[in-house]
Image (tube, rainbow, N blue to C red):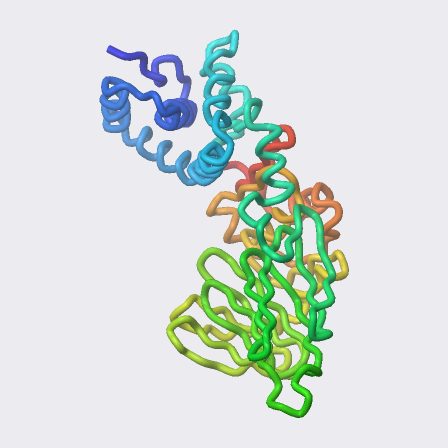
Length: 338
């Protein structure tokens, strides 16, 4: 029978972390998978621990695996560094557990931090920014574009259109009158995301792209929003909406403060902690993760983006959360006492 990580574990969470490491190592024997199935079915606490560890660790491990595809050897180095520790691996992991965390360290340090500094997938974009970096750009038509941290966009300007394709992150555009029209019909100015398009009917607006949806905020005049499925809506000055490809959902509160990052400030007004963490993550090297329970907490506050450590401390001081940091690579946020 193969060695079971649970044999040396002192609690279900530790055992679940051990299994997560083994099952993502790329060299799992059939007998080990059978051992895992028996361990999972043996106790309801095991299933609960596995579900919790999966919720916290699957995305970080997935990111490391994707990096490994681009830079072979990174994932293997993680597992080797854990497996070759002089002390028993369960004890090593126990020392870095903050209730539900795995230290993704050592072998991936340099490669992963480089990826966090400059997203590898966006290097080919026409314009891009790295971690904690913003950029102000003059466009060919005289308009200006501000890119938030860890953002990327492609520019398509021709006789028929002015198109900015947002590939990642967030941008703010100040649209100039189309001087190239020379008496002809002005070319439309459009920002396109994975979920739809936002065409300027005025001068200034913000667009943010997330995995499942995009946010459009009309800061001056109006913006025409259209989803990939053709649903349309006009946002007037001060209005904002989310679009997910099929629907447009108007935001009840005013969202002009979402542009505060252009001044180095994160202005938060009754927003989920998960959204706050997503913004701070673009300004912090290393992986910043928040548990689902903590992500639902509501936050008010103003934070300096240049000092994410201070921002996180302010959140600890005002929210029922705890933050555990493992070197420069991983920071976990969870509900206090969980």
